[in-house]
Image 1 (cartoon, rainbow, N blue to C red):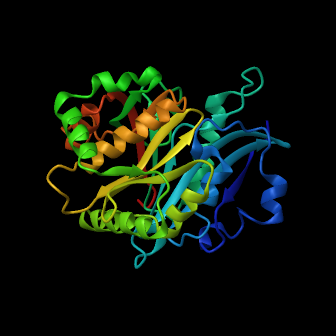
Image 2: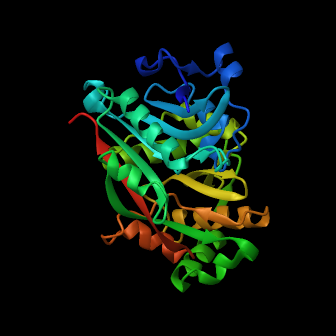
Image 3: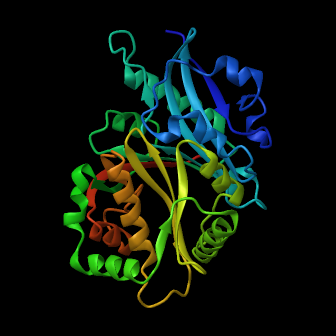
Amino acid sequence: MDLYCRVFSSSSNNRLTKDDYILGSPRFAEKYPDNVIPTNPFMSVEWIKIFESSKKYLALHFTVWSGDKCLLLQPLFICRFKPFLPDALGSYCVALYAPWIVDDNDNFDKNILFSFLLNSLQNYLRHKILYLEFRHFSIDNIFHSCFTNYGFKSLNWCDVICNLKNSAFENDIIKTKRKQIKRTLNSGAYVDFAPTKRVLDCYYNFQHRLYSKIFRPLPELSVFNSLISSSIGSVAVIRNEDDVYGGCSYFIFDNILYFWYIASANVVPNNVYPDAVLYYSLMKKAADEGCIKADFMGGGNADRDYGVRNFKLSLGGEMVAEYRYKKYLCL
């Protein structure tokens, strides 16, 4: 079986992608696979589109083909987190969730396809990033041996998932959080699901201040503007008539709510709890619209206590064990 790769990316502004299929080009439209059925928002072309204007982030679909048939699609992004350093020290690449693989077990071995992906991806990224990381792989995933064979380190990680069927999560919210949500909504604060530019700018300032404080990279404001204009997600903010208290960006895809970034103001009234109300209101709205679960997209290292995870669990979430796989390519 002769295999080869094609890389579809969000931008031509990054020298990593000069030979790839760039969004908006005739080559992209002509060659993008038509047999892939996305199982999450990151496998959609819309995911690539929201990063089209970004200078720091590059969204990729790394695909494996045989002849004219796409056999595997792995969504990834590359982040330039230290622009003053060479690529090999100032960039990293993250794969979000397990790949889509063609459902044809009789003709294609999934482990062979994934091993080909790992080998090709490392060759593609070598000398261009500091490390490569695969996130949200289940404990019983079939690719564990592939990662081991290619020198990846497995990390005991976890996610937090909420069951939204029949608003079941509401019964699992702890008493103190219920009181906080009720007090906030009784204070006159409300969740705005269609923020104006001014309100979005306020939310982004909260997010930027938080991520600067903890030394984490953050996509540009233009990415969040593109998210609002997309069909796969948006931003919700908590506010009153005069003030904005916080905001949360999210995706909804295939009846699943995915939380992305969340942040709130440094100072809010004593009876306002922005994060709890944002999570609750988005889950309530998603449940009413037919979503079956909410994915908090991360619960931290399973071997360590983590306050953020405990907060998510207090809102009716359930901890789900998973693996992260990581490999430094510059070494």
